[in-house]
Image 1 (cartoon, each protein chain N blue to C red):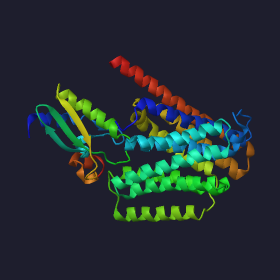
Image 2 (cartoon, rainbow over the protein chains, first blue to last red):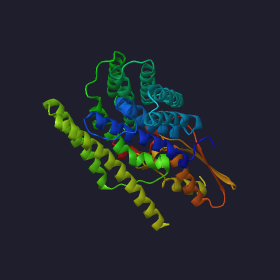
Image 3 (tube, rainbow over the protein chains, first blue to last red):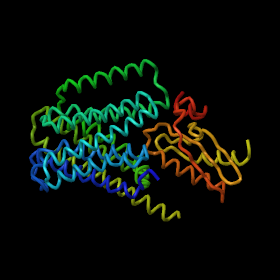
Length: 294
Length: 99
């Protein structure tokens, strides 16, 4: 069998969530909260932990499951271990190198998907992986983190755009819509290459990318871990909290209310925690339900 | 079309793509069903090669087919050629997605 068993995928997901926890903790410290961190330099690695350690690992895992090839799992393994190295206080090179390797594996996996089906949406996914790899290379070369933000955000935005375009095919879009998508894609890529400054990457990450994660998780968990996540209306609570926290954060920024920013940061963290808790609770309920009906 | 093939196809209607809530047959994912006394061979695809649901849906298909072909070998083969496109869906599925 060329695929990896669901039970063996779980540790990879755990590494991703370890990175998320460390990244959120580092973010809170940057907002002025006294959160204990396993390594003080993590405050400098907030972005890499969120983008590479968490998203890179879970997206890499998702792509590996789709491809069902063992080599593709080396991607999330490497980026997850890079994040673990950061948490252990190993410093930037020991973090950046495995994450860069992880991004190259995701790029190879995405190009394999593109070779299976040459379409705009598979191109978009591969372009996203290429952005992450390029950003990681620049990081390894010592470029300051703010200069990498457009590349890393490009990774997430293009990955999500590709996945949405993939779903849009059930009601094929008009040729005008497809052309317009192409123009927007080109504009995004040009913006990334020119490294146009991106204000408030954190709010893009939370308001757009995490909202997608919340919506995607109940469908993707059963595929990756073979654990059912039965729907319940409570799933909307973390989403409402998340958007309230982003709104508070943007309002705090715009109005210069620094206290609001700090409070909104805590609310961000609570929303993410509520998401993890509600998903875990649904998995437990699903298992109990399955045992009862067995 | 043999009765067994019809039963296999009917069983595959219970296999739902969770992302869109539609069954594999109406989505046009089933490319071929071959029934011999020893085994049932289903050739099917996914709506995208980037779909992490692939092996999950294939496992569901295997279970569903095994239910109507007891004792025989069930082989679910995932194929990517030709790539799926929306025109392969049944009229009912197209209507569901707003065609």
